[in-house]
Length: 263
Length: 363
Image (cartoon, rainbow over all chains, first blue to last red; front, side):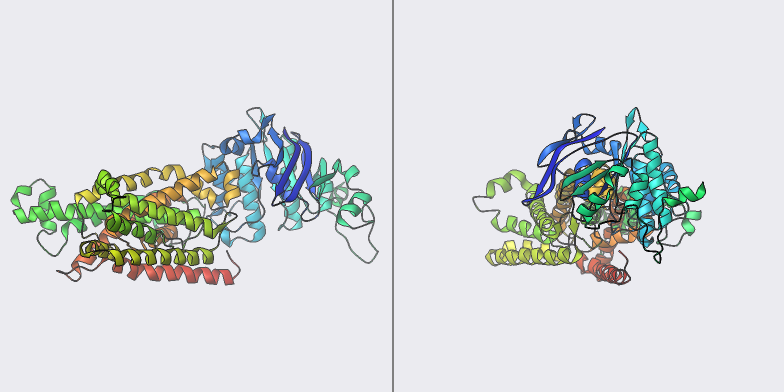
């Protein structure tokens, strides 16, 4: 279990994170939503042990995150960062292999191939990373994170997957397949924390939604409680948008509806 | 032999370039052996390859005294020195490029070499003053390499502080601040040269040219520990440098102690660069050409790039040195001229390639 207790982060006089307390449970997928600059990435960085807190404490299984060395942390959680550029032409396989090496895989190349197949990029192993499209790069990075925590529960300990806007440059189909992979990871007993901008995707996949605004937790709980008209209006300034049909001439696409169609 | 048939610059379909890496190391070792033989067996006077063959096969007493002296006292230390200097330069270049995430970072281009030369010159000029004389006496032949190491360290650290903001190094800032730091070092060096006497001036001229000409066993011994140290840490930094290419945060997420790694690499680069400058002067572009060419063949992974750079750098410098001392025999061309002649175009190519890639919207 990963827990934040009154986590506060201040940088150059600004409070980026204000007294945030929360728990990430194994088997649960938690989604952070909130407007730009709400402190979503800061919260994720704090939880991943990357950022030092000004006050409060982050703990993994009751032990302060600062007491783990980077190597130990790497075996507990993997992080999918936002899009990044690469100055050297590593192949897709070489990138994913790094994740497998980080968790001490005996055959990192085989694990890397497996992870690439899991994100639907089998056959892309030899492609230079910089030559891939933005979405493909994102999926290669996701495969790297998966290769770092290949099993949701390993040696009795749940592993965690931190995803910072995993759907940012993906088409609708891949957005859903990435989140389904994350969902499966949680179902198998792992911890998943994702930052999402798309409230529909958050509503479909999250067990628990954390609404963040100006560094503070505004609401927390299952999506039927947190994605209400009042909260969306107060946080995003968009009123009357939850659960209503748009005007008749505007088509709309809701990924959640695909389950209905299948039934 | 599928791997051999692959065109340069393309990774194999399955994306795993380990086999190319191993193959490349083997080929480079062969190349290095040949380069050693050429270096030992060529020169303006005395012994040639047939004499060398006699010497190696244990029939050294068939050689004349002069031939033996040339081989043992001139060629052997020179070859050993070239080997160490070449390896040190290329590895420090490759490590620095990994640290700065930038294929253009070369200790010579960004002013680290000038810092080392500055401190070496300071060691020569101020070495007899009351402040430094005891240190110089105590350290003997290690004094100048240590001074150069400190100079290299200072400039690498300065450069890192200036050109890296929030874990990102921008090429323009890196090159420009490198020029500034280098220019400052050169200016201070000019000041020292102004203060120097005739004997010191002769010693100083040596730094500016860059040559293996003054090779002695003492120099070989004084550079040896530094180059060994840098080669020895390769297995410990290779994985971390790979991860660092994805960014500081990503490297940390993958279990790399980022700050410790960076400190170690800065130390190693300064050590290799400083020590080589102290014994052979500033020889430019080896640190940029060798890793660049190798990346085209085996990819950017430091597991293979670093050891291959060590071997390739040694081979390249030995060949360049053999050319330098035979092409205008009995005179000798400064080796820095030769490395710059083919190094500068490669540097330009890299710069232009980057430019067009950026214009096309690539990385």
